[in-house]
Each structure stands twice: as C-alpha cells, then as structure tokens.
Picture 1 (tube, helix red, strand yellow):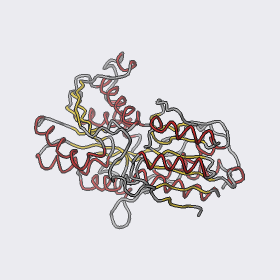
Picture 2 (cartoon, one colour):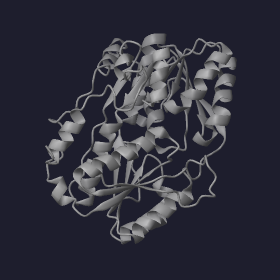
Picture 3 (cartoon, helix red, strand yellow):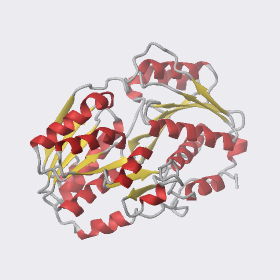
Picture 4 (cartoon, rainbow, N blue to C red):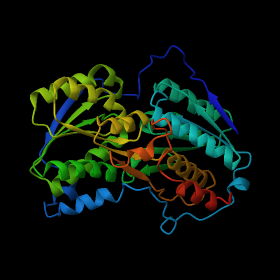
Length: 390
C-alpha cells in the first residue's frame, strides 16, 4: 500500500480552529417555507405530499451505482497513473467523517498503484497553506482539498501550485450546482437533494404546518446548498411550516451547540423536528432535547457511526448516511481524469436512509456501526471495472 501520513506542520497552532474565517458566533434566522433561490420563489404548494413518502422509501435499500447513466469513459488507470503522486488534505482531521474519507482515498490510490499522501491537520489556514506549498515544491501532480479548505482563502497558494504544474481539486465541498474558483476542478456532491429529503421527512411525519429547527454551520461551503434544498422543499410542499435556522460554527459546537438548542427548544416547546445537516453536531443536540424534555424528533445527514448508533437507540429518528467508500472511489476517479487531462464527469452520490426499520443492516457483529457497512459494493465494482482493474 502506497500510503503516507504527513504530520501537521505547525505544532503550536490552536486545536479546534476548523476553517479560515469561521464565524465563532451563532445566530438564528427564520423562514416560513421561504426560499433563497429564484426557482423556489416561484414554486407553489402544488406538489403532492403523498409522493414524498415514496421518495423517502426509495432510499431505504442498498444504493446501486448506475453504470448506464455514468458518462465517464473507461481507461487503464494503472498504466496512466504510474509514477504519479498526490496529496489529500481534509478540511480537518478532527472530523472523523472527512478524515476517514481521505484515508480511503489513499487506500484506493494504492489499489491503482500510485502514491497518495494524507496531510493530517486541525483545520487551521496555516496548515492548509503549508500543505499546498509543499505540494508545489515536491513534485506532486495533484492536491485534493477534501470537504473543507476554502479555495477562495488559499488563492495565492493554489495559483502557485497550478503554475508549477500541480492540479488542485476540491472534492465533496459543494453541491453539484455550486461553483468554486480558482481550482483545476470541483467534484460536487448531492447536498441539495439530501437536504430536501430531510425536509420531506419532517413534512410527511409532522404535517405541512410543522415547526422545524435547522442547525447549520454557515462557514462550510456545502451549507448553502443544503439550506437552499431545505428552503425549496418547504416552499414547494409546506409553505405554512415554520422553519428556523440556527447557525453554530463547528469550532463552537462543543461550547454552544447544546446551549443554543436548549434555548431554542425552551422558547419553542412546540418544535416538531430538529434537522442537523451535519450529524456530528447531534452529540450536542441529543442532550439538549433530553435536558429540556422536548418531544422534538431529530433527523440528520452524514452517517458518522455514533450517529447511526443513535438511530439504534432511538435518539435520532432518521439519518441519511453516505457511503464513504463510494466517495473515495468517486474522488479518485474524478481526480485521475483531472490529472490526466481527461473529460471531467459528474460523479454519483450514493446514500441510504437509516431508520429503526433497517438500522441493524448498518451494524457489525457487536451491534455497533462501522463505516462501510450496509451500502453494498456496487460503486467499488463499477469503478474498478472502469479503470481496468477487474
């Protein structure tokens, strides 16, 4: 396996800083089925709510990679990537979801036969800058900014890399509809659709006049896509719903997320649902619900193991989990095409709805969740066939 972990460059950096320019304050805004996009602004409540349950049910089974709709051409990846090396930089290694994806990316690179180095970091700008500077100087062919380092704040370093022939790609950072610059490529994900599905669950189970709290972290680029997905879905199917957004930066989750949620629930005892767009925040939201005696149900997105365990215990009613192995294969595919100057394609996002009905399929023999369980291997098999590895 050609994998190497790069240590963080500046040991004195403050642990817990996640992204450059993170707003450490929290705030709240309210909508009543409103939307920030022009399309949703024109939407009416003409959608049939009964169709939402069928939409949710569609994602309860094992997801399948659709080879018929994939537009990428097959190629001999092992021969094409021989001798190349790249670096993957997670937004922060303190987020197990992102760190595990980067570890899987390096594992997949090893299967193809090229070197992938992982830069562990605590999310500080100086660490991201040091990684890019190292890539520009040490013969890397590509740098992957995975779900975090904001490229707009790293423009000078990104440009230096590209001037030195190093491709810089962002992955799993934005929705498909969002654009990022200046980079060599941006591999989007289905954040907008996932967020709409979270809204669908609340509408189906609490009615079109439901009361919903959405906990977000607006310093993350993908948050905008998810906020729009939630707002658009309520605008279309439940314009009479009350939907409030509370923003807590990731660096403040430990100190503010529980108290902000408690304050909201105390002021709004009729809250039906809490949507946590990143499930790592539920470790603070679950205690807030319990401490206030609220009857609000929790739904969330990502598929972090402890959050899946919350589904098993009933603390989370529904969780949308995304297969990290698929993300890793999709990232390697997109970035190999970028490194080889091939046509970039839209990579699929495979996710699954976890509830009390099917959560046992996500658990190991000890009854605990592990990454990768319950999603099947259709993506792995498809990509390895596309790359000529099988």
